Image 1 (spheres, rainbow, N blue to C red):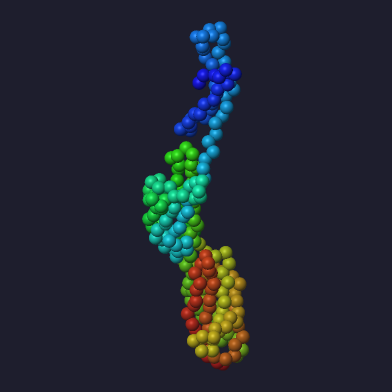
Image 2 (tube, rainbow, N blue to C red):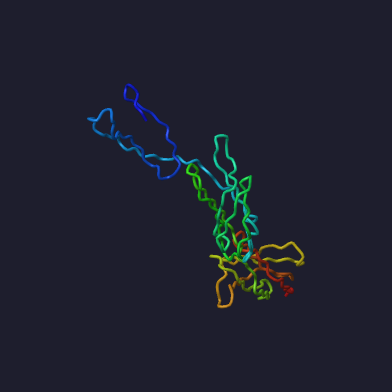
Length: 251
């Protein structure tokens, strides 16, 4: 650059890589002014203000049974253009949520489709990321939580008349998944016909481990004949469960 009559100068310099991170002006020598000393300006840092990007992630399922899989996960890569969010085509997104590290390239709409997960035993998340290959675009990451519903079932149920006015009901549950509830409330229900009209007549607040299963027992007032069952409400993290039905005759 050559200075104007007042000594000023200006220039436009392209920034093309991350290492162009400082700028200064320097006067080294001038054959027309051999007695002028060289000099330089203060060095100024250059910071690139990256444009925002984002990944919109949509797994085919967000809740799966124990050892179930998420069959596929779609992801869309977008950048915040001056006219709004626009797709980024031909970019490689990656994820380590599928057993092996998987990469997919976005189509013209910024979309990519990832494969099925491995069988899931416990709550998990599917993460997708894009490491920007453009100096002026920021990296993008997204993650979606997947709930794995743990199995729950009744191992046994007994109902016997303890006297003319009460029935003793007991049994046990099993949880054969990857976790067990912190508390296990069990409802004891009665029906005169066994075909409907079930009424909760007692609740065991917390079944407890007895070496084989999670046992419960209680007594309920009932003088007439009828049918008995136990229920457990574990949703959303555990399956709901209903026991076998047991008939108890009138005294």
